[in-house]
Length: 183
Image 1: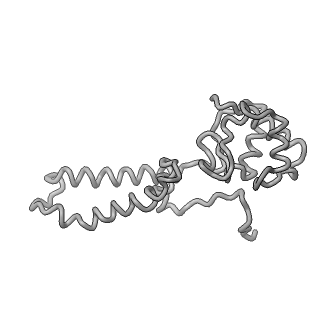
Image 2 (image 1 turned 180 degrees about the horizontal axis):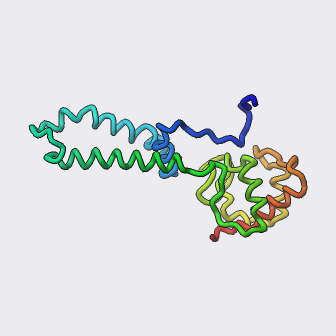
Image 3 (image 1 turned 60 degrees about the vertical axis):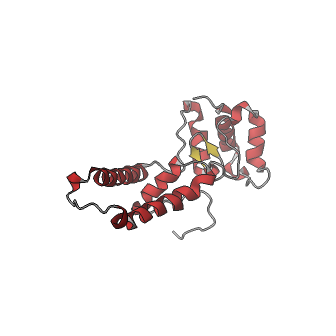
């Protein structure tokens, strides 16, 4: 199949050698700190590595006689390996990890597959600070019928999901109405 550049349901994932940065972005949530995670931390590490011959002028070259440098190097490698492992084993970006009652699983699956998490967040998943509001406790703020109307019409810049069909719209509205912010 041909690639569709207009799709909103696809969340790109990096190649394996960038998984540690990808996971670092999951750890550092506030959008204001994203440049620190993507530019600042790698730049600081590279500068420290380039300046290593200038600030470590000790005569010893055997690793066990240089515990600070050895431990620091090992810790960096372990941190990168751990973050790479987390990135490689991470679930689907469209997966919603909140516990859900069995009757709401269909609506949860539709929300995950329809691209809602590209703009909204639910629990730890989705676009934190994205275009749309956080839906984690939407059920305690808005009644089910208002949720269904919003999903159907698509207020503001939100697209309409009327094409989902009545049964799927009801499943989505039931699921979102069940979200009250409590686990």
